[in-house]
Length: 137
Picture 1: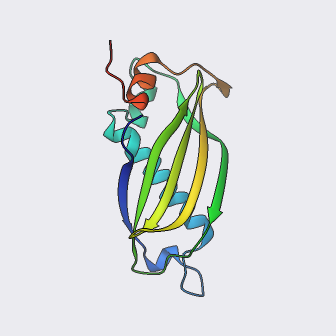
Picture 2: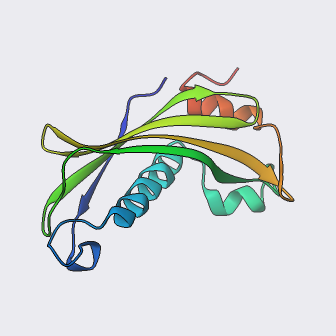
Picture 3: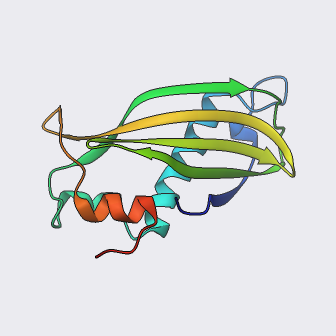
C-alpha cells in the first residue's frame, strides 16, 4: 500500500457550529477532499475518469463509519490522512483520520464503489495498480 496521503486543512468560521467547534457534517467535506487529493496525487483525476480510457465510471461512497473522538475548533490547522486499505474488484476501502498535531480527532473507514450508469463496474487495472502502490507491469 502507498504511504498515507496528508492534506492540511484550515478550519474556518463556516465549518463550525454555534458553539465554535467543527460541525459534524464539515468533517465529511474534509474527508472527501482527502480522498480526492489522494487520487490526484496518484495521477487519477476524477473529472478525467469520464473522458479518458476509464470513461463512464465514477467513485460513489457505498459505506462510511466515523468515530468522532475530539473536536476541532475555528482556526485549527488539521491534517486529513488517507490510505487505501483494501482494493477489491469494484470497490476500494480507505482508512482516514483527521489529526490535530499528533491527536486523532476523527477516524473513518470509507468504502467507495466504481459505478457507471448507476451500477457497479470493475475497477480498471491501471487504477487498481496506482491505488495499491505497485509498479505497473
